[in-house]
Length: 238
Image (tube, rainbow, N blue to C red):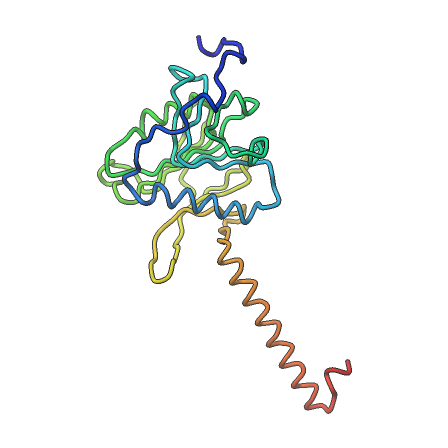
């Protein structure tokens, strides 16, 4: 059994392939996980105990071979360094991450039917990924599923959850769908949410909110100064 092999016999991530070179056939497969990553980069900028991988191989010893990775569109691990030893990861080998398994995996369904609802479900369950999200906004009717499905691992088996956004206490994040606008283009995306269901803002939205708050504060000061002048008081003297 692979599981019984001593740790020193397992290859390092520098020796393992970092990609299967399979091109994505759906824009969302790149955009959605990257958006989730960028939001975390902004919202959790002061934390160094998490990693979000995109189209990166997860090598593990719970499958047919430790040389065969599973490659989700996105995955999230908690309790690991954002940059391992100050360097970018080539891939994610569980045995090099103190046996920390990703808590969350994301698959975005593509034009070509894949294994999101069967084979990958079994792989992630055996690996021990606590939450598994399948996002299928275009082909859900074809696949006879919902556009957004979230599964939680309970006693070794995945159970579908129905609440959205869904709060994941073990992760400290919720996830659900929302609207995203870039210029004149609007699209549905996935967002992180807090425990109360309020979605995390993008860096641009945070900057815009801060700018609006400054403008409101300046307007308030200007109105207050005008009122003081009406009363014959020089606001600069206060």
